[in-house]
Length: 293
Image 1 (cartoon, rainbow, N blue to C red):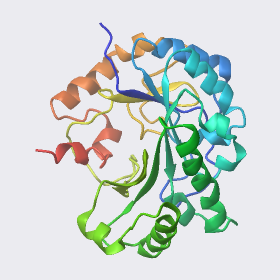
Image 2 (tube, one colour):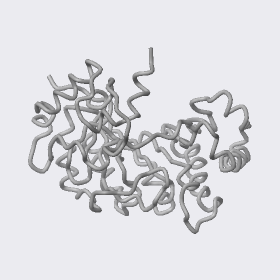
Image 3 (cartoon, rainbow, N blue to C red):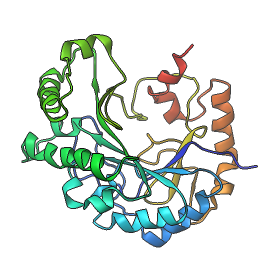
C-alpha cells in the first residue's frame, strides 16, 4: 500500500531571477524540467498525492510556457500551489494565473525588500493588486497568500512592513496596526475573501556548514518530499541543493526510491525522534515540529 503525501514539491525550474539576501546562492547548474519529463513525473506521482507545489528554489513564473505545465497537471487531476516572488506576475495573463489547476498562489512580498532591483515598490505591487482584485470578480475559489515571512526578534524589517501595511490598508480598506501585529503575532490577516496576509519568521536554509546539530522529528517524507528540476528526489522542500539525493527519476521509479533503505532509514529515524542524515541534523527548521507539546 503506497503512502499518501499531503503534497509533493516539484521544481519546474531552479531559475528564480532574483538574489534575495535571505536565500543562499544557487549551487546546482541552471535547469528547467522538460515537459515530457514533467509528464512522466505526473504519472509517477499519481498514486501518492493529489497536490503539487511548483517550487523548491526556483520560480515557476520565470517560465514563459508555465501554462503548458498547468495544462498537463490539470489533465492528470492534480491541484497546484504556485509560489512566486511576484516579479514575474506581469509576464502572465489572468487566464494563466486563474488556471483551473491552481488552488493557491503564494507571493513572497519580502523579496522586494531584500533585492536591489530597479523597480519601484508601486510597480512591484501593481500586478499583485490587480491579481487580487480580478480574483474577486473572476475566480472565487482561488486562495492568494501574500507572504511576509520576515519576523525576527529585532523587528529588523519594520520600516518596510510599515510601508507595506500602509499600502495594503489603502488597497484593501483593512486596518493593519504595525504595533499590534508585532505584539500579537497573528498567523494571518484577512484582506478580502480568500486573500490573506500571511506571517512567519525568517528561517535558515539547512546547510552542512552549519554549526547546529540536533535530533528530532520532521515532516520530510511524512507529509511531503521534493523533486528537483534535474529529476533528483529529496526528502524535503528545503534540500534545494540536492544534498540528500534518494534517487533520480530519470533512471529510478518513484516506488523504488520511496522503498529504498536510505529513504526508509530517514522515515523510521524521524518516527524515533532521530535525524539520520547529516543535513537533517544541521537543520533548524525541524525545531518547529519538536517544540510542539
